[in-house]
Image (cartoon, rainbow, N blue to C red; front, side, top):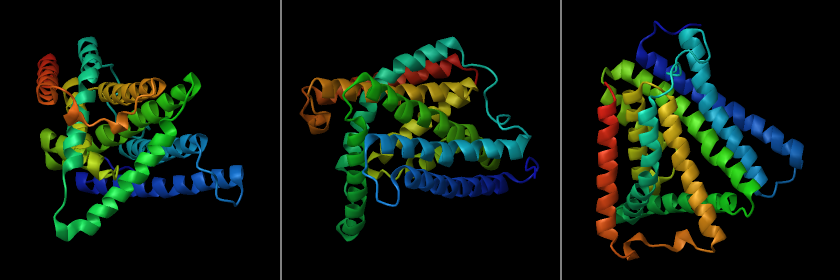
Length: 290
């Protein structure tokens, strides 16, 4: 079945169907691995267990639907993606430098997001959201609580490289492109995709920073016409976050206990990093011909 002549909305429905089908399939495969390795007993949630399940989940939920869609669209598993040419070197260098600014920008936005509360009538929903966030934080803490370089390298593969590649293939490489064909507006496609990108992670108290990060990645694809640039930015952001957390733990410093508003000069520092980020975005835009 070829779908290149179908309406973009129908193509989007097919992409969603592929996502559901691959997600269910990978859940079954993961369960099979778990039963094979641990038997019928409930396995102890270890770092190795999380490395396995997280990797399979990322590949199954994002990478496989993207390449299957590409095959249905173009007849090639990788024909639909902007992979032909690498991003311009100046843009890649600017993204690498900007990654160090994105970290504090995301931290400030996450702090603001965390302080948001729902009306009293929605307190039950808010508690459910808090519980989900706490569960995610516990799993994240278990995965990042590694001592040696080997554990750090595995985390860089599982938590940085794998999601950077798989999620960018699905969201920017596929969904944003199909959405653009449907709505006929490249900017609307970027922001709609960024919204879905943030929602689908089900981490509601990180919604705002992930939403804006998704838009940033979308514009990198638009400006560079290469999927490799948002992959690079996504990879560097995840990798730097993991490395900083690893170094903080090695120094016995608890980043989770840090309240950004208690940092001396919080407001001037926040303004500075946002200005630097804005200048970086403007510089990237000027480097493009979009």
